[in-house]
Length: 272
Image (cartoon, rainbow, N blue to C red):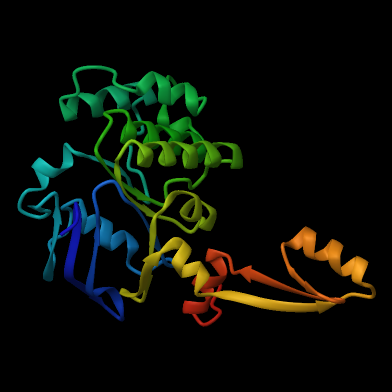
């Protein structure tokens, strides 16, 4: 059993919405990428792990503790970024972070200053006047500032510009290197490729595949052979693209991106 364990989880909202007999586990120190389009069941799964929803069938546990019955014990160990972050809009960002720290019983500023500097965030303004990107940064700081051992990240880079997305990816990679256990739900395939050891793809509430990121990609390799005008051109082409030259022909093995693999499991659907 992993640090995060989901066993035969079912929550049926009707109309094919929900999760159905879902099972997977995330080991200690592992980063697990959770991919699927909107409505596939990612957020529903994470909300069960947070203890916000009681399973209709099956079980969720964190560190061996039942997520529904022992949610209060679990949440002190977690850092959580929800897909839609709820704020008290009349608070400033500083007040929200202070409130969050007090709620957790956090006795020091922890990593707050470091995180504010990393994401170039001045949290003193009213949250209701902040941009979506600034609100997302506040949510990121709140999730990481108490140095939690487990991270549940639901679409964590929404609203961030490319620079801040890269800084967030670097942060997750650093946390993984420090031995944190991470579940990352994302549509950003680069995030998953750079950060995650394994990937699970969910479709219509059911898991369609779980595998190591590299193993998943290697099973979806494509071989292309091209013929050049001269052997010299073929040699140059082979050198540029790490191909195998045979006379004027060059054979190149190309791995599909994780996005292409994802679309393969969805029959070419692009509505994500």
